[in-house]
Image 1 (cartoon, rainbow, N blue to C red):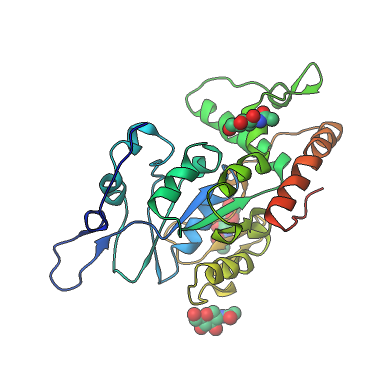
Image 2: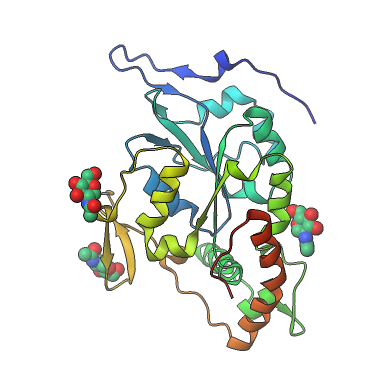
Length: 279
Ligand SMILES: *[C@@H]1O[C@H](CO)[C@@H](O)[C@H](O)[C@H]1NC(C)=O
Ligand SMILES: *[C@@H]1O[C@H](CO)[C@@H](O)[C@H](O)[C@H]1NC(C)=O
Ligand SMILES: *[C@@H]1O[C@H](CO)[C@@H](O)[C@H](O)[C@H]1NC(C)=O
């Protein structure tokens, strides 16, 4: 692995507007994952805060070797132009499960703030299936059934990567090798759907932003059964799988998974010193 050295002076780029100088700067906070946890909803909500600038696309700097090799100046060039007092935030959900990323982010800035959003692990896994299923559908390809995705000969497929991604403690252990627990704030993705402003207020506190985003930023769409953001150009709602219905999974199969995740969940709770409302 090549190593890079850089000076801070080369990591911010200014625009040439002579009246209001905006800059591209390194993020002060990163949303590291988890996939299908609600990272898009989270960054969209944070983008409404006047103290925040967000990168619109997933940057994949630390997890993709070909990007990492381009160095920090490239990373900065992916960031939004903003006034220097703004907090820049990027999100790449693949970071959470990538083995190289924690060390690399730590090398860049050991004091960076890390946001992780998690959901109940079985639900998250099914959401990942739904996402893959619709991606295949879009290119007119078939995809395996949900039961084939989850099970082999009636047993849980332990080698399934989506299952592994829901073993939050496995990945969290790796992060905690490099960062203390107070570098992280964990957002409850299920609560973010139910009462978005309550979860966002906690994020504001963690990021030391003034409290701004309250219930008046949202309205409840009765038809959809979700909260949506007001004044967000196109209608933007907080919903699972971009509003796609999850496939039917028999209660007995769900129960198998709830039981399977029980121990891994306990390990995760103990690592992060808090619990979530999962079965
Ligand atoms: C999950 O994946 C990680 C690598 O991301 C690996 O180290 C670990 O052994 C896997 N765990 C299980 C139970 O498959
Ligand atoms: C939300 O915040 C705005 C100003 O940022 C304020 O005018 C409004 O009264 C607040 N609404 C609630 C429900 O607290
Ligand atoms: C609520 O959602 C429905 C169904 O998607 C949509 O047709 C309707 O326009 C939405 N209502 C509002 C007030 O946004």
